[in-house]
Length: 238
Image 1: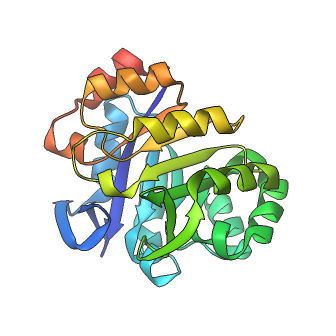
Image 2 (image 1 turned 120 degrees about the horizontal axis):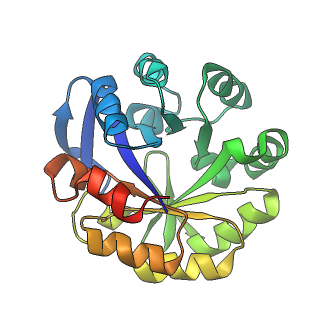
């Protein structure tokens, strides 16, 4: 199971939100690239980067910081947040982003997601961001009536080869993942599932590994020290 540290960018800084609420923000570091190097030094191979400003505004706003992170040796970067145009996806992959995460466009422009999956294969990941089982878009500020399981099936049919599921109500809360929905997703589609939201202990990682997720994204728990990244990678990585 891949252990994936998360860096959320807002105004060029490394922050965490509580349940995706932009008004409930904690700033953890003013140098995100230094944080990326720290996670790399502790054994991380992948880094989950979200441009929160981009997610809310519909276009990337922290690309300079992302480029600085990419320059760090030894890390693969998956990037999401406001990526809603095909040419932007092309440029990001050219710049060295390993995987581009598409969320809002999975709802608003599924045909584009299909085209991008056909063109770029494994480099495209669909983000399933859900609140009480229903997908939320545009920086999690707009709720939809779309069921997360329904969207997972639709996106796999469109060609998605990997899905990231985030439970918004648990994100940044240090509670626990939504194991039930994660297990349902794994049983529903035949592509790898990466889980995020509420992971705050090694016990959570153990259970996720048993359920069968490909990867676990950890955010706040790394910054607060509830989870030691190096220990998590040694115990569950690979």
